[in-house]
Image (cartoon, rainbow over the protein chains, first blue to last red):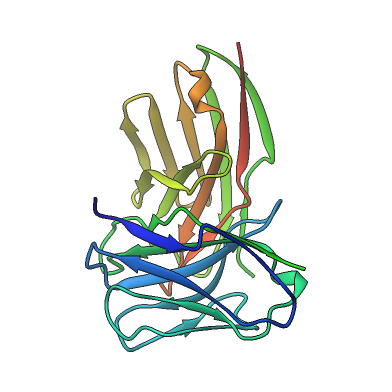
Length: 113
Length: 109
């Protein structure tokens, strides 16, 4: 089934640890995005990539890094997790050069203790 | 700054009609999206408006007025399964989506 796969589904992590959230899409979309969603706030863009080999910073990039080595994969890394990074993380993809919507993965629920 | 405003919560009755409003102030405008998000799940696409007017898709319709920076999502013949959050998002001049905080819709029998 075509779509976006995120892993892990959920994770509890000790503060200071390194963590990589995985995201893979098979729709050949050029653009991919990482958002965090916190209660009472809208989805906030962390990082994005408009095409393989390029990345950009979103609204809340501090403490996170991404890479886009190929079209399908867009991992998000927390180099040294802090409790304020406790959130639900969604990966999305789209054909950014059209009016097509962004499609979302099922999310990763991350708790930093 | 960029801002998307929508009501935090609304309540409606099964079988009725509800209108969820969204006002926006963004740097540029390249379309407005509505998404539905059930609790604990990912957002799913509902509708897209880029020109003024009404777009109808089954029980759901979405309206846009670019001059007023205003959109609404109209849900007809409400069903219990429509209980969810509804997210308004505007694509700005950089083709990035700016998201509202969402409107939680509670449907009562």
